[in-house]
Length: 467
Image (cartoon, rainbow, N blue to C red):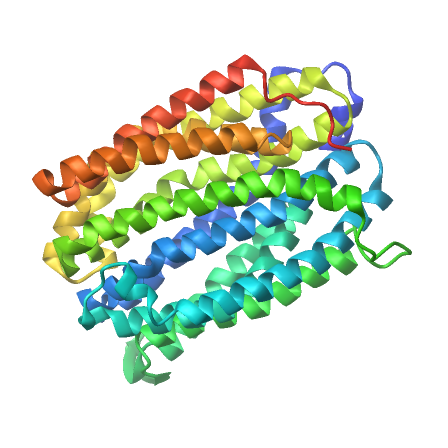
């Protein structure tokens, strides 16, 4: 019998090996997409880094704010996608398609609202974050263009989450990789001026707009627009389990909206307060100087390679747990949750070890500033010891989302971030500089991983089906 999630749900005798293979089968496309995404982020950061510390610092200054917006978008889309996973697990594909219709209309309105808010604060934001006049202008322009692309970004995230929860991990993974590839192509044209390069010994002229940081923002926004439209076509027309081709209701249905709010509000508030903590972290780091802001931003980019497997497995876990709960298979819910978390811990531990030794080489690719590269390497190595427990928290969060359990994990996240990381950072950074901030991060991630594991083993997250 072919190893698919549908067949696993029907089978009453699934071995642990089959469960591991199932998680890996669904995780690998997402992990590969994350890998491509991170590789492109490295290239992206390297392009901007070649312009100097000010350019890197300008983008780094508003990075935490873009995370905040992105986190809210993820929370909003999860409120609907988890319902789709549980409905498909229960064999109610028509009802799942109606949830898709609800999500498209509701989130388009929300995307436009967030877009307007972002544009309105874009010029003031860099100064609120403590940025100097040398980088505030570019930082404000970057955030303005980012804000303009938010409706498309939200539609892309919603479409990807819907396809993943329907069991299709391959399509959104390929398209997620494509958005990164387009980002790099657009950046090559928009960031740099027209220039002559040597390719296989022959001189070639590459056209360019020479827009610098503004070009980086425009390149990312253009990639979001193109891929979001393709994503919408894939989920609305091509998907076999959920689509809008057949008959269905476009009217807002109270039960669907109520369930979405129940899931999305804790997640979105979690992301708001978590990313607000990142903003506070930026404010703590900003007085250390442009080099510290740049090193902090690049260290975050470098570390993203480590948590790539964790997020891939977490996405798979959300779809798997959602469908096992929808199918009423409590036995599979429990066993798949543990398999997913254990795999995440192991893979992120291995990535942490690898990054520890590769850090100097990685930073040499991201920046041509020796001071920024050295500082970035030092602070990243300080935090890498937390990767296994960070992996535990990421994968546990994926499991909890699939069960619709978002309130308590959100509270746990907030308590860990604000009571551990931020408090420690305020105390340590004045003494240890940027290294102190990353030491506080390391301690906090370990605490977060431990409390998430405690909740997973308690079983309190295993609620009744949302449907």
